[in-house]
Length: 201
Image (tube, rainbow, N blue to C red; front, side):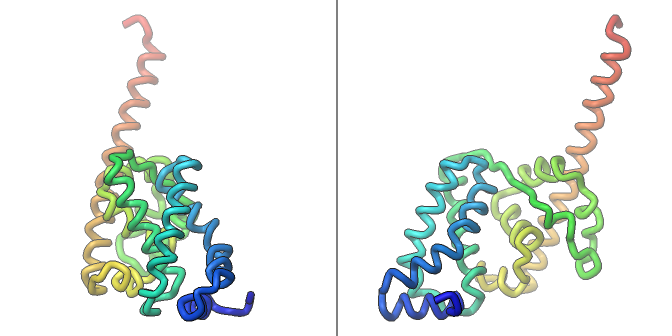
């Protein structure tokens, strides 16, 4: 069964309803979905619950998979949307985890990304948390998970030009938020340094 593609496994499961095909899909993607949920929640128990819920949803949704995008991209869209909905509905504070891919941005092919590539990781996480969940999601899909503009458009029911526009707008807001955060922490560091230097003012 190893040689079956994801798409073939989906077709076989939908046609036969045999659990072995779904189990193979689960085996391939359980850890990836869990890690994505963990990046949203920073809570291992909550991430396990969300992963379980997502695969339950997947059983129902598999018959609607039309292969307009790769299965992995389609599954990630379900994961993103479900996690974002849960965070919004439970008023959970969004803790964004930034992985190493942010340091490998393709700044040649995407204007204005040099600053993002140079952003310090912790300040970047703080800046991301200031954005709306939808803005965070589209940035993470493009720059952390390397999902193509075309696939993001397909997933979200948008045109490619609309995706590019949203990415630019979200990048601009991220850059502004990052700079404000950087200035705040710099001023705080100066204040702390001065209070240590002159404790008896």
